[in-house]
Amino acid sequence: MGGLCLYVNPLCSTYDINGHCTGCYSGYLLSGITCEPVIFINPYCSSFIGTFCVNCFIGYYLNTGMCVPANPLCLKYYMNNGSCQFCYPGYYLSNGLCLIVNPLCQTYNVNGSCIGCFSGYFISGISCQSLSTLIPFCLLYNINFLNTTCTGCNSGYLLSNNTCIVMIVYCNQFNISGNCINCSLGY
Image (cartoon, rainbow, N blue to C red; front, side, top):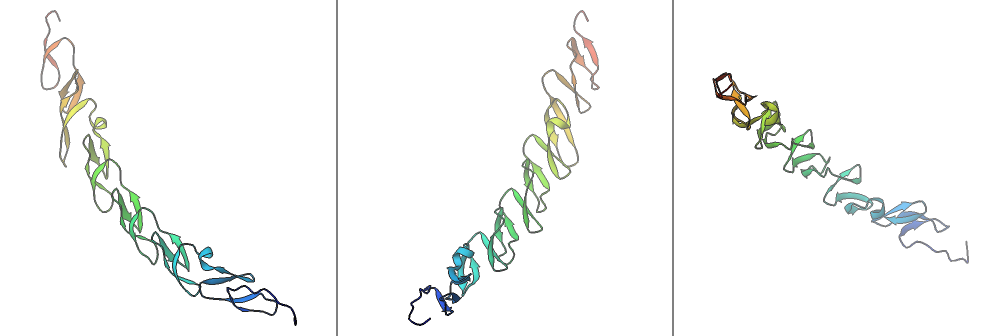
């Protein structure tokens, strides 16, 4: 095209006779007929070699040349695949993922199974359940790994064979089975 001056994108390292980019300088990528900064294509990349991303910003990992977000529940993750190495407190590691622990668990093992519950709860299988569901109307418990027993009932209830039973209003004395053995005067 003799005699004409064409604008050539300064980011192009090579171009054709019409001024269209055919190659770009390091840090730029050919997009159609022009060069675009690689950061627009891969905004979470922290360093490039040519147009290839080689490192990602914190919170991202490299996956087939692109920076993708890591699991936000991971305290630490593998840079090569984003799977979790360690989890934040209250989460446990399972197959590279951080999963939430039962919030009623005070202590738990590496598999997320409860090994200790907060006050007012007991271990049932691998999780914690409310003591109020264990023995209705029980106020005080003796808890150990073999069994849980009621040691005191709510007001108006009497402890009998590890069960809280409604007190008979006009009874002055009960036997160990919870039966009235001495009634109030007139009953």
